[in-house]
Image 1 (tube, rainbow, N blue to C red):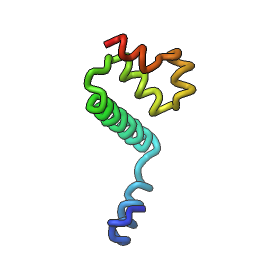
Image 2: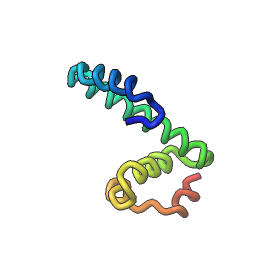
Image 3: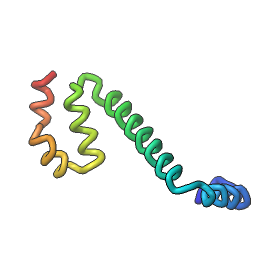
Image 4: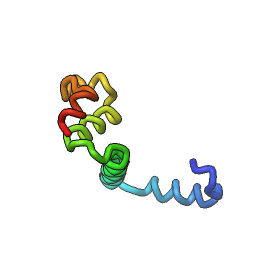
Length: 86
């Protein structure tokens, strides 16, 4: 699983994970998703410090869903429209 983890420790970790109930695993997955989303939002804000909240939401949609689906959800926002909004 992890290349920097000793095989014995990895085996213990997997054994512990197998004992976790499904509802808890789903909860852990949801927490990991929220953390990843927050980190992505922070990265976008860092890369585009002058972007509007709307632009950042659009850029997040592009990252998570791809440009085609983001356009279907948000419409066709262009770079020029982003610049005009700021």
